[in-house]
Structures are given as C-alpha cells and as structure tokens.
Length: 228
Ligand code: C5P
Image: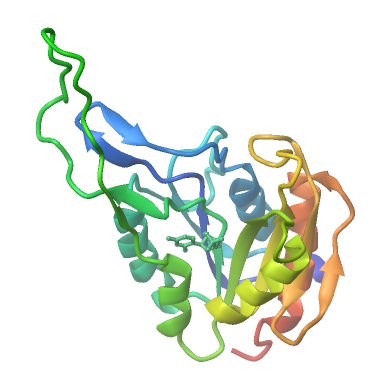
C-alpha cells in the first residue's frame, strides 16, 4: 500500500538553518524555520521509514520517532550527514546551509571600544556544499533530493535557474521554492515544483508544508529501489 512503501527504508533528512559563530555569543544565521524538513520527516515516518533528522536551528518540534542529530554549523552538518547517510536509501537536504562562515571565531566576546567609533571587519570564507559532497560520495541506488530557493531575474526564470542547479549538483530530484515574493520562509503554506534529473517537472499544488511533504514523497517513491 502507498502508506507503507517506505517500510524499512532508511531516510536521512536535514532541516533548519545553520548558525555560524562569530564569537561565543553571536552567530550569522538565516530565517529557516525547519518546517518543511520536519514535515518531510513526519511524512516519511507515517510511510514506515526509519528516519534520521539532522537538525540545525528549527522553530518546530521534531517528531519524537525520528533519530535526532542536532548540529549548529555547516561543518557540523556536513559531518553529521556524511555519517548518517552511510546506509541510507534516501537523503533529503532540506536545510538552509550558510554559504559562508566567519573565517575566524573570536575566543572571547567581541567588544566595542569606548573611546572610538571603530567597528570590526568580518571576513567570510566559503562553506562546503554538503549536497554536492553527498552526491559525489553516494552509494549505488541511494536517492538524493535537494532544495532550491530561487527567484527569477534578468538571467532567467526561477525554473531555469533550478534546472541548471539540478544538473550542477547532480541530485536525483530538486524541490524548487520560488521565493520571488518572499513568501516561503517560516510560513505555513508553500508552493513548490519538483524537478527530476530525467527532465520531468511536477508542479505541486500550493498547500501546507505537510501536504507538500506528501507530494514530495510521492515524487521520490518511484526512484526508490524496490528490491533492496
Ligand atoms: O546552492 P543552493 O544553496 O541554492 O542549493 C540549495 C541546496 O543545496 C539545498 O538542498 C541545500 O540544503 C544544499 N546546500 C548544501 N550545502 C551548502 C549550501 C546548500 O548542501 N553549503
């Protein structure tokens, strides 16, 4: 039955935003709520999967039935994902990973000086692309799903950008959020398009992140090896 197609399958999902420390009390973060990743975890559990949730900063409760791995930074998320996906059948990178992190983390709280108006200059360095790394290291048959928040601009539509990203990252499916109107982050409702490596484009009707999670799993299922 459709509710048990993921029975016994191992699913690893990343959710939420990473936090990149500047000093012991400050970080660079983003507005990811973790809702879509948590909804995907819950839907996979409902379908019988064994779920590991690698969670950055989230504003919603993770499902208690998932194995929870808490991380803070992109580097920690990369390490946790690399470990968690070793025996996974499906990997979903729903997290909002910081592209950059401060090149140095101050050991003590950065203080303002009282006698002048100086401000520190923060230098950033690139974080690794976790999704691309997971694709490169994936085991045979493992399905890898990425997300992309895109806006249309002078160089192309959101769909065109996402199509290029799918090819560049090498994942099997890419879930496109068109964020042109600033509508997705932290909101209850969402609207996505699922792009497959074979060129198939599946628009998902707008709805709650829970409904959208169901539609995403419906798109993933045909790719999951049915005999292993
Ligand atoms: O390149 P972009 O950030 O648009 O790609 C989004 C996808 O890549 C998401 O699935 C996100 O989780 C993943 N990602 C990643 N590592 C990064 C940046 C994004 O895995 N450093």
